[in-house]
Amino acid sequence: MVIAIGFEGSANKIGIGIIRDGEVLANVRKTYITPPGSGFLPKETAEHHRNQVLGLIREALDVSKIYPNEIDVVCYTKGPGMAPPLLAVAIVARTIAQLWNKPILGVNHCIGHIEMGRLITGAQNPTVLYVSGGNTQVIAYSNKRYRIFGETIDIAIGNCLDRFARVIKISNDPSPGYNIEQLAKKGKKYYTLPYAVKGMDVSFSGILSEIGRKALPQKATKKRKLDQEDVNELPSHEDLCYSLQETIFAMLVEITERAMAHCGSNEVLIVGGVGCNERLQEMMGIMCEERGAKLFATDERFCIDNGIMIAHAGYEMFRTGTRMKWNDATITQRFRTDEVEINWEVGKV
Amino acid sequence: MTEIVLKQGAEAKLYIGNYNGTICLVKERFVKNYRLPELDKTLSKQRIKAEQKSAKRCKDCGIKAPKIFHADFKERKVYMEYFDKAITVKDYIIEIQKDEEQIKLICQRIGNVVGKMHENNIIHGDLTTSNMLIDKNENDYELIMIDFGLSSYSTSNEDKGVDLYVLERALISTHSNLPQLFDEIIVHYKESYQASDETIKRFEEVRARGRKRTMIG
Image 1 (cartoon, each protein chain N blue to C red):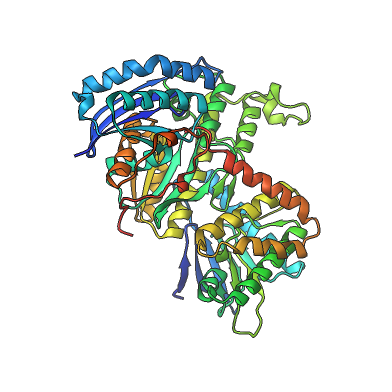
Image 2 (tube, rainbow over the protein chains, first blue to last red):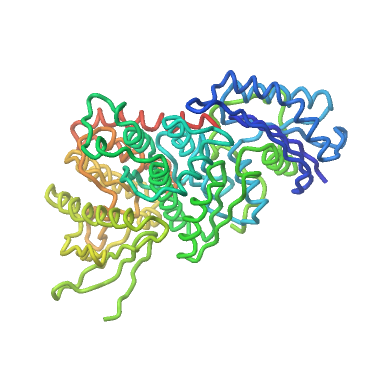
């Protein structure tokens, strides 16, 4: 029996989770929310995490009814992410590991998402769509690695959504993506946006510029002339959110399907914060149904960044023999999904 | 007539058909119910058009590509020339992977053709070894480019750079045991494309963007 505690703080969420052989004992989280029209900045986010982390450790121990001496390994997010918040959380993880005299393990954030998704849904060897504020990747396992088949060539899908939310100044509480989803449900009119699929890759930056121009034509660059349509009627926020979601989600489903055809896979797992969007899940579900595949998705507890996924991926590493020297217990902003060697069994390959 | 489905991909199925008495290949694009009907219709039309135009552009500049006989937008079908003996470069590379000379030759052909396409401002949009055919029954072979659904016409180095990036990624995922392919292809790409320096510079930027991007979890 292995009990692992996990610390996550790569972006604006700080989460702590405790897991015992795949059984979730505690999963607590706090989110740093900024006013409408603004995003989270590294320094302020780190400060938020520093202020919350000790209270969350107490809460996680209380919820799980676990004593520190029962814990076998302390896991934390090594990367990828924003450096200041990563560092703030890593320092706490190192300190308590020293205090409690436990081994420490740095975990790849993306692997955390994938392994937690597999644990919760029971997906065996899925094609994974990983969609969040900082990542957009289509991943499949082969030969000891989670390999990236398709990804964004510029900004992440969540970044596109967050930045559009800032353009139209909607609330960041509980998350900009959630509020866009609610507005989109009331949208009716579809405005044509660029559709950018390149092989198995996608691009969102041009779409973000275009929808920004549609939302605020008066702010459009002087170089570009306004269409007559732009001047006559200002699109409603509802219609813009609807058009944006329909376009970018269609792109995601398309590249996921291409990857499935490429790998001969019949399972899809959606992970990452954008993965709890119900319209995205619905569209992916239709695609899967049409090709006789199965869709696996989780809810906000496990989709959105959390500590339990770090604990679980760390548990898989720990039980298959991975150990980390204190000198290696650092952080890194750049840490690609395919850099990690997977020593545990994934599906029947 | 019963149709013999040759291949069913994510977006379309391919089967043998008949166009005015000629045996041809029919590519029928599926309706995708997951996306809005208006978006689906637009995309399907766009891609059929791209297929027609780029195949013709390729032929005009001496690159072998299927002749397009007819496009039916309503039925979402494209009728085109069928290369019955051709195999995909993907299968061919797997077959010859231990033969260094043959690998070099195929890389030369790929590099030359992709260079020529970019020289003529044709962006393929989905450069993979599954989208290239060879007819190896002859002593020598010529590369046949297919599947122009995502293609476009562009003079921009960004578009060409992204095209190369897509090719590099496809080679890594499909032929991970042959890491030398891409570099070898680029050597010959430069031979047939005059302004290749600028494009390759831009391609390196596109690649760096990709590596830099994993910033936030």
